[in-house]
Length: 293
Image (cartoon, rainbow, N blue to C red; front, top):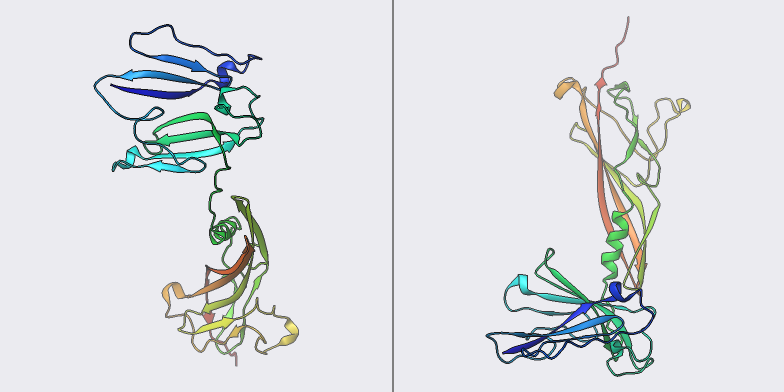
C-alpha cells in the first residue's frame, strides 16, 4: 500500500490567524494524518492496491530549484512547476522552512500543473537552498514581440491618387506621407526574464509596381510635386507611362507600393536586425493628352 503526502495551500484559510497552527489527525487505523503550518498543510493518505513509491509523490516530481517536468509518455500527464519567491518570507519556526532557519536558503511559492491547459494545478510553499534558475529568454524573440506591438502599416500614398488625372508621356511624381506607423522611425521595447530589448523600425525602400509592367524602387519617401516644376521628372521617385489604362481592368492600372521595414534591435547583450514587409494598393487612370485644333 502506497502512502502519499499531498501539499494543500492553506494561506487563504489561515491568513486571518496571527500564529502558526499545527494540527494532527487522531489515531487512524489507516495511517492517515494532517500536518498544517501557517502557509500550507500536508495530508498523508493511504492508497489501497499500490506498493512502493516515495513520500512526497507517486514517482513523478519537479526539479528542485527551477522549472521541472515529468512525462510518463502521455502528453496530458506532463507536470510543469514554476517558482516565485515568497514575499514576505515565513517567520522563523514555520513548517515552510522545513527545519531550516531564515537566511538559510529561501521559501518559494511553487506552482505545478499537469494535464494540459485545462489540467489540475497545485500551489504550495517549498524551501530551496539555492534560487531557481531564471527562465531563458531569447532576445530575438523579445525583439519580434516589440515589433509586433508597433502596428507597422503599408505606405500612406500621397501620389498617385485614385482621383487624380494623369497623362501618357507626362512624368508622374510618387511620394508618401510619413508617420511612425507608415514610414518610421518607430521604437518599442519588450521585456521578460529580466531582459529588455528595444527595437527601432524605419522604411528602407518602397517598390512601386505601376500596373503597366514597370517596377520602380525608391529609397526614400519621394518628393512632393510643386507646380513650379512643370514637366520635369521627379528627382527621387517617379515614372512615365507610355500607354493609357484604357485596356486595363476597370480602365485603371493597379498600382502597388510595397515598403520594406528594416528594424534594428539590441538588448540582453545582443543586437540584430529584422525585416518586415507591408503593402498598399491604389487604382490609377492614365489618359491621352487631347489636342484641340
